[in-house]
Every structure is written in structure tokens, then in C-alpha cells.
Length: 121
Image 1 (cartoon, helix red, strand yellow):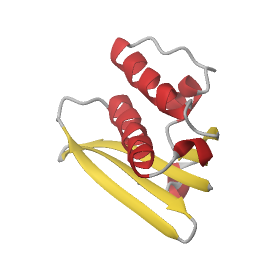
Image 2 (cartoon, rainbow, N blue to C red):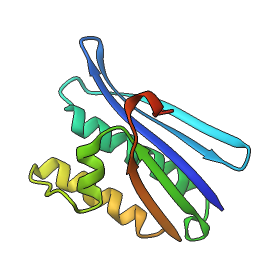
Image 3 (cartoon, helix red, strand yellow):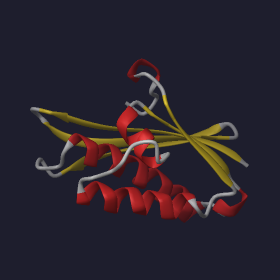
């Protein structure tokens, strides 16, 4: 099965959120979570991806899934793809959790798209 996962994290004066939208066959699943106000934007971005991947792994046999993950956060995408170093300890923990989940999928890609094309945001 093929899936697409769009992820996003946002911080505004009103609060911090993370979102995901999963597309598969002719269906979609989406969710937005409110995060603690002290959460940074990069942490929110990673949390959105982690939440979406966790939802998929809870509801599907991920070893049969090829997933394309799309984010508008270029730094996070490059950190997950190991093109950029991840120095902040909290982000390294989140990246490790994402990598652990991704290793269970049949295959995966993580790519950047501009914010205007992000279906999770």
C-alpha cells in the first residue's frame, strides 16, 4: 500500500500546534494537537511527523507500506535525511524516534515542499 503523510508544526501568539494529514487509497485521516507553549517550532514540526507515523503504525501493518512524507520544514527534512547535523538534544531524541518508526516501513521518502503546498498546515 502507498501512503502520503503531510506534517506541520506552528507557533503563534495564540499557542503551539502540530498537525498531520494521511492520504491512502481514497481516504484521509487528519489531526491537529495543541502542544505546551514552551514547545519550539522545530519540536512542533518533529512532533507532527512523529504523531502521524505513530497513528499509521498503530492502525496498519507498516511493513507493507511505502510512505512519502512531506513537510514544509527544510531543516527537519534535511536532518532526517542525514544531510544536516542535528545538534539540539531534544531534536536528536525526536529524530531518533522518527527514524525508529521509519525503519519499520517497507520504504519511505521524506521531502520538502513549500508551505503553500502543505496539506497539513
